[in-house]
Length: 51
Image 1: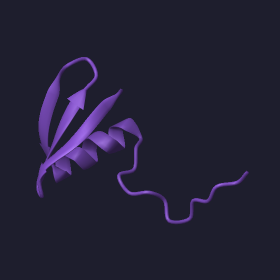
Image 2: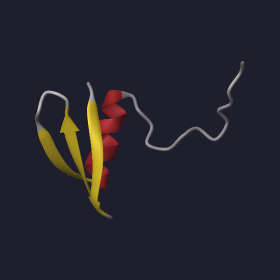
Image 3: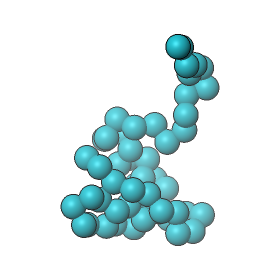
């Protein structure tokens, strides 16, 4: 599932899917979508880069 996100106000975000569809979601709906896609909205605090 590929999509772009565009925050339109503090409580809503527009999700634009690469197939041309778009939806306006609340913060709660966005959290549900991201969890279904296996994506975390916030970066991991403990993540580090190893060369």
